[in-house]
Length: 325
Ligand SMILES: [Zn+2]
Image 1: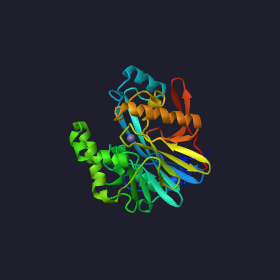
Image 2: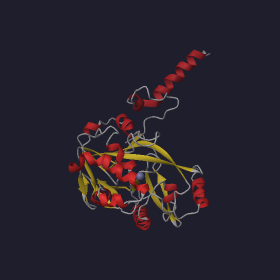
Image 3: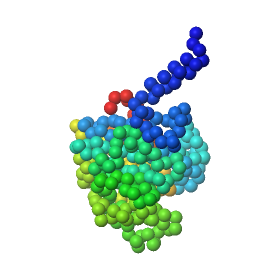
Image 4: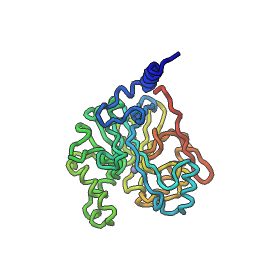
């Protein structure tokens, strides 16, 4: 018969074995929570042809449902949340950045909340290292749009550039809008912080930032796709290799349970609601018709799957977790 001590020892052994190599690479700072309450580091790898993609989790932030959607009754929003087994008062918004290995380059697409967001965010840096990447080895950082949850991870609060050797590429239309001082002065008070955030991140590197137009290849195999509406220069990306195409839809929707199901719903974050709606429907329609794999910034981790047409809206079907990359 097993003694209690043996039981505990063997259980601990099992836990270590099951946790696998990801845990061995995890940062071992004093702040790391005990294994019993922490998830494994949040990264997940998959391939598009010869291109390797690693989804890297940046945490989550709770957003009250009230006021989240401009053109839907709160009762209908709660019903959509309940149908997805999500909380009925707050939406846990998740953040997923991508690391793309393509043509011998390491490319980061969007950078998370950095060290200036909610305490439940800013996990990108630790998860990125846990996935085996070094910030100093990043060749290119591509930004989809200038909202803080996508750009703040570029620069620490103390001013340090997080990816010191990377070329930073941003949409031309985002730069033109957010870096325009006249637009900042004319903006409503509630948006002033967003303008200030853009200047905090890009101000010190302004002369080195490369600006791209939609339709252009921004890195090997990665093409910028026009997807304005959420913001003036909001961009999606087509990633193609070996006859396969993957569509990173960025923020054409927030949580799929709300906005893929109900593509006409306008999130309060969409700066031009009607343009955002048209972009959302166009890209979801294309993804459903072509049956391409898609990636989101604000879908449940690892934030990738497929889109099906379903009634008046669409349905998001997550990929099945695969042990093989
Ligand atoms: Zn976002």
